[in-house]
Length: 110
Length: 110
DNA sequence: GTAGAATATATCCATATGGCTATATAGCTA
DNA sequence: TAGCTATATAGCCATATGGATATATTCTAC
Image 1 (cartoon, helix red, strand yellow):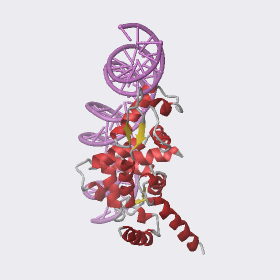
Image 2 (cartoon, rainbow over the protein chains, first blue to last red):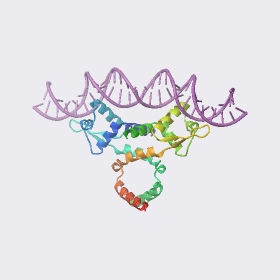
Image 3 (cartoon, helix red, strand yellow):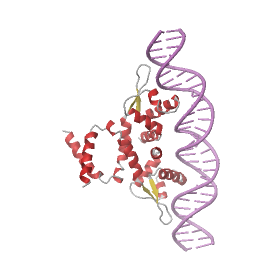
Image 4 (cartoon, each protein chain N blue to C red):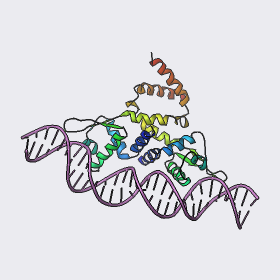
């Protein structure tokens, strides 16, 4: 679905949201923890989190009083796959590497 | 620069612009050629091209009467590198692959 | 059940974005 | 130089986005 790519790329186009993902790469965090590094209002952060969640980049949990967020890697993989189609344009050794990967995967499927 | 990532991700969040990049992956093309598949006005396409160019994703040339566009892979590599930091979250074999790549690069530097 | 903590939702505002039409600019070709 | 082709720029409009403040919701603790 193109829609997914739209939402994911759009969500990633904001530095606050990328920083939030960076923080979540270290593990789950509450809204308050995520808001802490920024000089933004709490509702502004909640809005950013909503954008990230609707793009599928994060997920909300529930723990007592709080709703911790965790990274959802599948969405990142989605755009990584999209970009992979262009890899040959900048990575000269890509073709050979690709060959190698096919072989590795062959072995792994034992 | 964060600004670069902002501009690149933002440019990629539009399906028309991604389709234009897809076309340019087959080689350079004039504005008219790029506009052809879409039911958009010519100025709308020119605007999209401007966004792509300001993000560094394409470049303009000049050839007689026309200003052909070409892909500029460096910008795509920029975000590929950004995403690579998250690769370990979805690709279990990443660490081993990474080891392999270091070795290959070692040989290539002969 | 009342108070406090954590978070979400409702408005509101200013700016950005994507589309259109009309017009300007630049380079060929006669 | 005049006209044609290719493309860019100028306005204009509707909608989206990112921020703020005020308020609602949901738990927890007492």
